Image 1 (cartoon, helix red, strand yellow):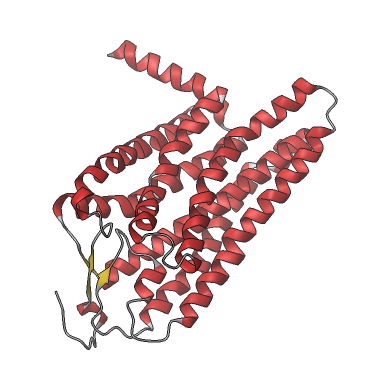
Image 2 (cartoon, rainbow, N blue to C red):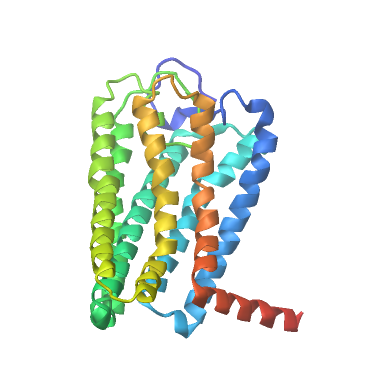
Length: 318
C-alpha cells in the first residue's frame, strides 16, 4: 500500500476503509443482520422480477415500473454490501482509488435512477386515478420504455461529472476512509485541494435531481388526493387510496434516511456521532431493497396470488 506524502499517480493510491468507526469490535455482530437483509433483498427482488416477467396478468405499467425498482434495488445493495461484508468478516479494508471511484459512481448513479423510477411510479398512480379511461393509452409499453431510458440517461449525465470532480483533485497521503463504502464527499475530503466545487456540485445535484423528484411526487399525490376526495363513494375512495399505499410506504422508506444522511453530513456537525451516521448509511443500502418487495407483496393482491401459485407449484414438484 502506498504511503508516500506526495502522490503523482492516482493508480498508486490505496485507501483503507475502517468500516464503522468506534464499533470495530462489533463488526461481526453487525454483519449478521446486514448479510441476512442482503440475501432477502436479492432473493425477494429477483422473485418479484420473475413473477412480473413470467405472469402475463402482471404485464401492466404499474408492474413494469415495479420491476425497474426491483432491479435498481438489487444493484444498489450489490454495489456496496459485498465489500462491506468483506471488511466486517475478513478485514479486507484496502481499496484502490479507481475501484473506490467506480463504487462511488455506481452508488450515486443507482440512487438517482431509483429516485426517477419512484417519480415515474407516482406519475403512473396519477394517471391511473385521475385518467383511468386513458390509462393504457397514455402509458403504453413504448412510453414506459422511454421513461426507463430517460431515467438512466438523466442519472448518467448527473453522476458522471462526479468522476471528473474527484480525478481533478490532488491527493497527498491521507488515505483513511471512515466508512464502509466510497461516496463522493468521502473521497473529496481526502484531497489536499480546495473542494468547494465538489461541495457545490453535490448540493446542486441533490436539489435538481432528488429534491425536484420529491416535489413532483408531492404534486402528483396532491392532485391524486383532490381527485379521490371528489369521488362520492367512500368505498371507492378507500380503494383508490389503497392502490397508492405501497408506493407511499416505499417513498418514505427511500427518501427519509437519504435526506437525514444528507443533512446530517452537511449540517449535523458533531451533534450526531460518526458511528451512528455510518451505521445508518450502511443500513440504508440494504433496508429499503429488503423491505420494498415485502411491502408490495403484502399490499398488492395480484402479487400475493401469483406468489402463492408459484410456491404451491414448487411444493408439488418437491
